[in-house]
Length: 549
Ligand code: AHR
Image 1 (tube, rainbow, N blue to C red):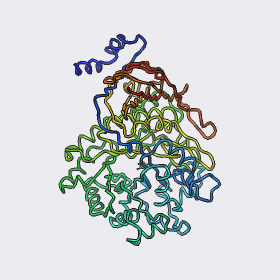
Image 2 (image 1 turned 90 degrees about the vertical axis):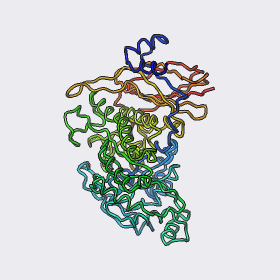
Image 3 (image 1 turned 180 degrees about the vertical axis):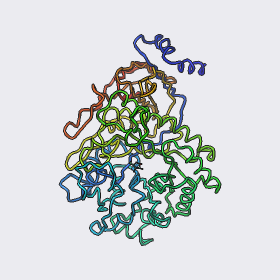
Image 4 (image 1 turned 30 degrees about the vertical axis):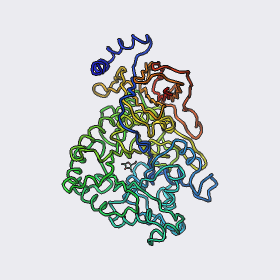
């Protein structure tokens, strides 16, 4: 019976017309939430963030300094910390990114006025706006924001820190010592005493450690086999100081299955796959060219000015996350049959061409429109649906950079549409992901050659106690959807809360001058029963919260 129903739903729009006609003459889509078909608990860490010492992320973005006239908490921008707290950030990754493999953690400890100044990894990037200052902290790192400042930031936001260790430039011993500085009890080692002198007597208890970053590229251009050897060297016998260390291996670029297969095979040869807790994966949606080019620079589009094809191309690239997760997971399972190792998507988001930076020093800063909100909703739905596979993730990056949640410069601050999506999805954290079946007309659009397609709706659902959270994105640019929503396995429901993020123009965005152009709208509805219809505006993200009785 179930199989037949699924087959029927998969039959697409023709079948859909019959299915919905039974219930509502207006609906054009159907979402079934199968409450009795749990997938796995959603790791809160899927809702993580990424802070790299890059452009305006750290200096100006987060760190303003204790003596600043900008309201701050021990040098950390107060407005940002407070806004971040409101979305329950579970984990924050730092210090990179490519920057991590050029960073000596020792530069960022001790009295701030004695710390060395170093050339930032990104100083020579070709993307710097022409009018950017070439002498500021974004080029020459004053190391004011080091281990203590970052862990204080994480704590103030309510998140756990996730460190990325330098494998390209430092040694396995340096890595051990960083762990010792962070986690050994005061009074036991010189580095623990140094930490206490730096203001943190209690161990920082850092659990998550990335071992290098993009080891296939800026992290050292390793082969998977050479990287596996280094990974084992770095992670052998690292003292834990009673903290169960979680090592994250530097995984593929996008969906490079060869990298994953060869790395896992090498670890398996040594019987050491279990050494790893997580396998990282980076996936950016960047090519808006519609198939005209695969060139990294030429393929990028503008963050603000885009047509329908460019809009859909970015979403189509982002939506590849779903199949990438499944295929990486399959290859990981060749050596890790019980799937002890989880996927860690620790960089994801949209990456556009330079030109919309919120200020000149914000290298890789870009504006963020409703397209990015839809991208965020689709991606978070994908992670929720793969809650059995994805153990942690981090959107790139937190502030003034790529798919950011905030813009912050001097005394100006605002949140982006992506921030609102994280706020809307926060109820999924720790919930039990349950299966959803979606049937909606597939989106088709013209590419340079041929036709591109995208699922008509994307959705996920989770249960926490009696609260069912359903999130749906409608990527269709020019059409609202009327979706029938059926809660299978629920006896009856109480109140329904619905929050929608949408705008009359998909290019709508927030800025320092107009910070509230894109904002969510909330509606309460009386008890909805186990079946109801929702209006999903074009290019929108919707959250429904249902109290099950
Ligand atoms: O997020 C920007 C950069 O993208 C990171 O430093 C690197 O890991 C990735 O290539």
